[in-house]
Image (cartoon, rainbow over the protein chains, first blue to last red):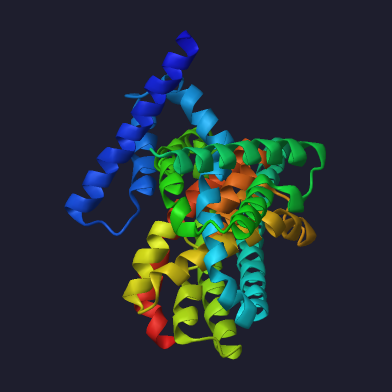
Length: 132
Length: 226
């Protein structure tokens, strides 16, 4: 019972951050989705210690565990694109597949190459400093 | 709330719960709950003659949690702040070049396939999260509904095939895996890679946010030259 109550209080808190971000985005006309701004806001609050992890962790881990559920109603919207899928479905699939493949390869490849190179350099540095 | 809305909400949740059990029992990219639930729901609507419009009220109830859920992504971000700080430069380089390459390849492929100007514009924004895609596509003269459909389709693609493709390309380091999924397949990909580990999930949500910030900037400058 206490657990359930805590869950709803935490959920309400996360929702409140989202609503505040909504107002900020609309009021200042920022070209960013309110949810992403809310994520940045909550991060800042966690960083400066205003909000502690335990204040939000129950609701946050529930929401993140079921994150994909909240996208399902949007994905069902693809049912209205039967006509387009019939006429150009194959081209669309190839376009999405190829450009996702390229995007994943370039992003992941660069990041992995640059970050492991950096780590190796640091390891070499440590080895050298040990041998001195 | 009327009874059809309530039934639609319950139906979505029950099928989703069943889909989670199925995915647990038979783990595979093709049994991920977002895919199986979506297919089953579309079949049910198709055979019972319910339109997507009739489902809209239920959709609004469920997606109301999308805002707070995205806000909650700050938690894995916070827990992984040290590794992100440590790899900030590689991450920024990977993110910018990766976003550019996925935009350019999508637009050029759409043109090579003689897809309409509308689809070309929508393909340019397919890698960012829906609200940003809808706003950005209007800057470059495309249709928001079509953009939303392509965003979902490419998110699903990334969720289903992304992790396996990364493994195939020898991208094994958790940080880089999370970063590329978030950059290319936004929140739908993030919801999937979250299950692989907290680093992947945290980094993926940062990358999704960052891609949402840089894509409109890149496109408003670059799109006319593509």
